[in-house]
Image 1 (cartoon, rainbow, N blue to C red):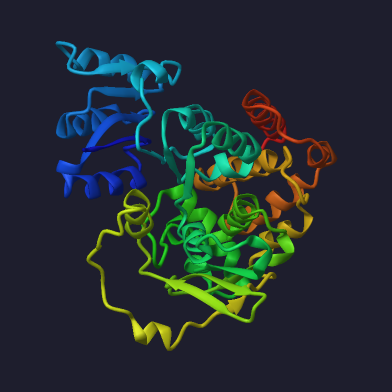
Image 2 (cartoon, rainbow, N blue to C red):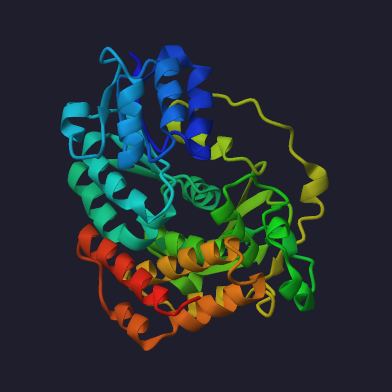
Length: 387
């Protein structure tokens, strides 16, 4: 019997990687749903290629343009996720949530009750709305797999081990393009230089987050949420080759690490074939890299954002939404040449310390509307600063 799947954000890099995997094994998969925001032409081509009946295009203008292209009821086209029960009357076997940004929280939350297993690559859903996601997973008995390479590695290494057996988790950071650049040169960094990640091919936003190491701050929050461990048990190590993805030291004296090439195909492949143990053709072990891992503590004078971790509340709060929104806002200001790279980190720290934002550390997220309203509120406040 074919495995029924749905892909939220199928035109993203994660979505495309998953489709390449499915294409090589078409006889064993049936795609029930594909979604996109504005990239409707790519989405329509994907739906035609994989004979997908249902598509969702959330951007209204793109949705209307798509309707003009689609003829003879070739697809069932929807503009939002309100009709998921109609689209997926029975639970599918697997959902990939690959929508980028905080906008991916609502679709991720909504589709949990329509699938037996959900793989989540959307950082914001796990960072801002984890208590809501976790409650929905438990309520619907839906299995969950994290797709970020670091968290998938932790998930794989734990292999049902009790979290109380963990002494320390180390997640690695490549350090981006400026790992060896003196801090004195940071004011002269060009956008084109910040977008040249040495190991990963990613979108502009996440590439800048990698260059500032803000992505590692977010990944520490994700790890804390997913694996229910304190920030004091999670550390970041720079590792320029991105070959080791995590190291876990257990209380019984054992230390385990997980390695794989810096490509997202590996965690994606292993998530969709989780219980089948299907072989993936991959490169031989890189012993040259293993013999020169160069694992180091983060130079906080160059990457001051990692200090934000020490100021985060122990439990999930609305402040994480504030932090995500501030970072998103300022990264796009950098990409629009409104601020320079050196100012980017300084402003994130300065603004996140505003008293009007700090108060959200004491408020727990109750629902998605509250999170989205806060995002809009922070945006309005940031607009008044005139950056």
